[in-house]
Image 1: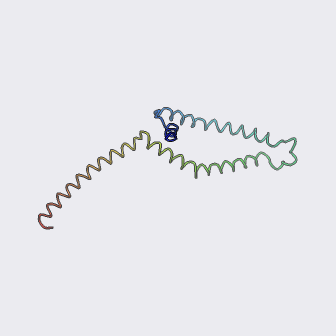
Image 2: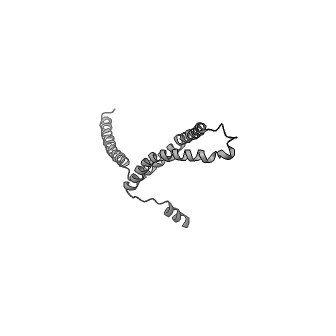
Image 3: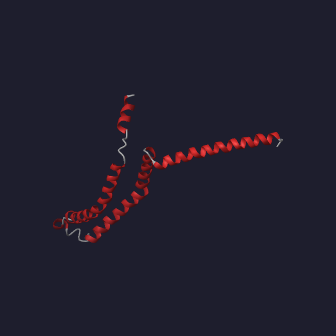
Length: 140
């Protein structure tokens, strides 16, 4: 019993409205532009510090800057494939579940449509029963 209450307390989600999610999304979009600059500067720093030019320069002569960029580009490509094949579907599914759970306008519209269709369906069934009753009178 205590574990159940603890899990409910830990896993409980709060409705903060759209401002927090909007702020985070705008910030993350803006950071992607800054990330390009930081990645380039990190690339230069990593190349210069990893190569240990003075100590290992005679061994790593073939590992020049274009090869280094190519290796990192290939690793980036592998990361992009992973994100595309696994992460995006998972994040999308999680977002859909969260959206369905918390004040989703599409869900409300679908529920309203379902109620309207249910009323129409019930009305049609009643009319069909009436038609069947009339036909039964005439022996059909």
